[in-house]
Image 1 (tube, helix red, strand yellow):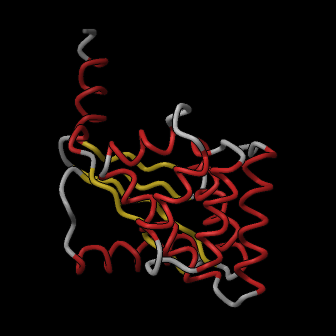
Image 2: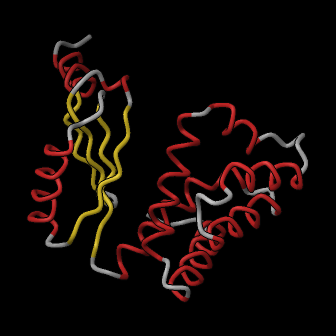
Length: 178
């Protein structure tokens, strides 16, 4: 899958600075937390994407929300992205960052989507199984999406294993000719 060159440039610049500062892993976790915060708050997501709000106002508000909770490296990068009115591509920048970080340390990121929060023990089992299959260390990013009804969807790189109830119902519907 080809990555947008703009997304790649932002992710690469963040990765290079974070790596030079010895903060690549920390920034990866901070990115994950920031993404989760945006997913949980429709208001925050709308605020970041709203073209009527001036960049300075956005940067000040985000500095207030994120200040002290994220590294200077990530905060400065968020400011840069906002300055250049690229807030909408931030999730893609984060995804590309995860890929770069994983490649740099023979680690892959697996996005795990479930209908309900999953217990840590089950996550550990899943991480071990994915490590066995990929022959790499696996970093799990979890996401809850009630629309899948049940089961799990695992995405590693460009491979997707969809074991959701929603997918199985869709397949059953096709088989029945509906």
